[in-house]
Picture (cartoon, one colour):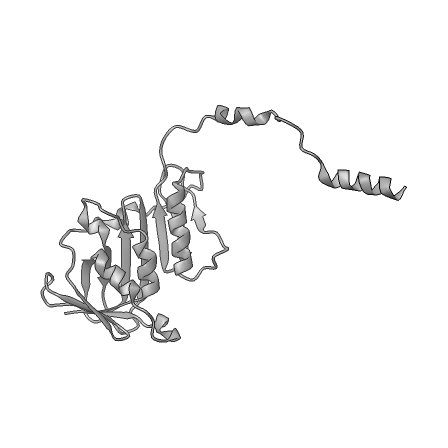
Length: 223
């Protein structure tokens, strides 16, 4: 049996990177890994990946690795905080001695019982780049928006952008903090045709310079 502390802010950020209706059923959940030193949360849909950790602070007991299913993740995130400071309280997961048994997640009086997804999660460490070239890449804007939303989940102001380091044809890195990051795979394909914008190079008509017209009329009226 293990005891795991998970913070809902990271769980919410990770949930944005879960796959939806994927035959690779494990990708539709969130990987939880823990020991007495830290808790890790990982989610990926094969195109983007989120990884984050929190220090155990002496609260974790034992070790665990398993995939929390999407419905459990959603249930936890739907719980309402009974008081303002509850947001800083961890979700405490107590696992069964049987890896395929029932596990319990509890937060501020809310409880959900779940079983892990019976699937071997891919080795996420393999897609983390060893270096970043800084070369420009092409990225799906939906993936960038996903990273932006995760940054807000983790406390970034909504008006700020994301800290994206491009990596050419390799995986780009979005850093949220020293304890969380995202990977975004670039789009591949032919560059767009600049000829598609040629029609807009020629002006169809001249726009009226309203400030100049107003000034001219005011001058004439004062004469």
